[in-house]
Length: 330
Image (tube, rainbow, N blue to C red; front, top):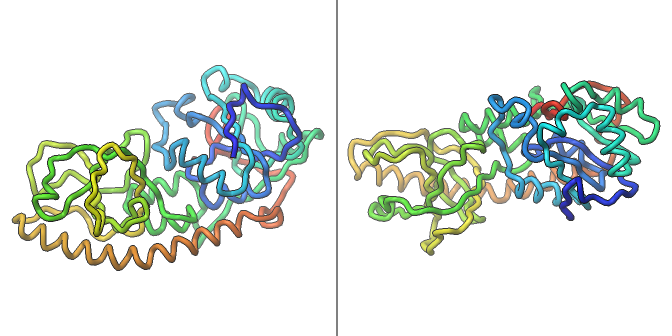
């Protein structure tokens, strides 16, 4: 998949899906399915329009591109979103971007999409445009819950990563560079790869999780290590099972499969070690089952993204992905 900044895009006839698409969840995939191009925004529009309300993101730019590319999209066009772009009217967005820059013949959006200054543009306005056809994907519900980026963020923060997987169509993934820690895990017999949580992205709530670290089973602890007075802040510590190579400086990917337990203070290091052994045993069991479940979820997501019929094409609807020029009910 090609990644192009809007100022560099070449005009051509295209079917384009438009949205912020943070997380690229199952609802987003219904919008994107059948499009050959995706138009998205970087940074998240809310961080520009109302920075005090900017959400912590589910995916960074790299992850979003990977997930969109996996859906068979040919080109992802990125709008460098700033205050000047936010000031553009909905009509300017249609005339200058969708038609003038992209040459859109078909535009697909979510039912809750909003765009243009003060978010005055909506799917009804797009549907009135005779120069392209408009496809509006209705909100997706799973077990009575609307699939949205904001809901998934809440699940991840609460540690409900299994439920987040159902809405994402894959496990929530966190990435970061492995940094030096105090090597306490190694002295206890459980060496860890340490990551510092990003302030701009979602981090699962404190506790221990069964994960896959670059595809390998890993017991991951997130928290402040209450058993020891370290003086350090929040840290992500991944004990990768049956692995002891040097990962310092490596960008590690953690796929969160299930929360094993909450963060606890232990009376002694020995009690902690005993619990860690139990955590590792349970992680090995969960990760073994989780890899099969992940493949199944990805297959279902891919099938769900195929074809226009599933997207419930409508000519008019209402509602949004983020901002003054967009909105994804985050």
